[in-house]
Length: 439
Image 1 (tube, helix red, strand yellow):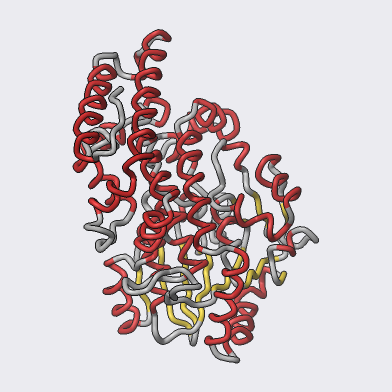
Image 2 (cartoon, helix red, strand yellow):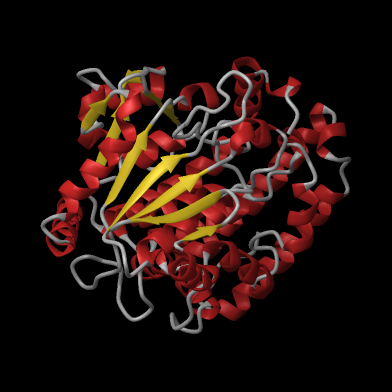
């Protein structure tokens, strides 16, 4: 391992050479699926040494790396673009396009785990106050495709984004999500449409509030029934179709936008020093809110729930971290109950004393349409200025941007370790029967 210096150019060259040597050592081994125990140990030792070097390099140079990629903080790069730019700027720091393409072809159990190197970089960036705030700002900007979609919504009253549809209904923008085959679960095929839909609903100038609701599903057992959402698509996860960065795109992107709104390039998204564009959000929970969809409820301004609906955070059975639930859930239901949900698989019926700590109103399933209309009227009849101001005031007290940034620095590192662990594969097979399911 090279000795670290204070010179960025010198260290970039020497560490890149070291990482190239490490890559060559791993490449000389058989593919992961064919390695014997000794070869597995060798690969793990090489990766461990290379990652220790990445930590040392970034401890000294993370601000210089980020500043070089963003032209001195004048350019906004989304996290998925940032890591690709870093691979070119400092070879070996993170995997390049060709390496990622090869990894994407493998089921999760056979991946080399190269995306862990991305987590090291992103975690260090988020842990740095200036770099992390700038990256959060970049991820809160609207996606480029949202601008055209807002125009289509204005012209037609709706816009169909595939997995997401946005409709105007009076003063409300309804965000309707659909992954009908998988009970409205989330995966790599839904995330861009989801974030674009959140952007459109937020930016639409002719509505004052937004509603999040699941569309009817096609599953034989639940055909025609509205389902709020089933969390991450575990079948796709097991078969390697969900990359590590998906978690960060989600938490730093649309889930954060539910809470904090859409940023502008000229203003910080920090509520103290700047403001974004935002609306209050209503969630309509029908069927269930599992995993990631339960996490979303913690960002909503008002939660309607059908009397037969329930919520779970099956993080223990999956072996991953449930997004920002560890940050947000304790302030809703307390630390002990939050740990029971996350670490001991506790289920909350929406119509229970504990469920009502998250859900504002319980309604009969047949009354959900009318309940949504009543809630929209209730939250908008005094105008949106006060509602938005109160949202910001709550965030300053409960989740300032700096707290969110620091949490995500830990989340980026720990979620990568979970995503590529043998325990995750075992959990998916034992608790989900993932090996017998096909995407």
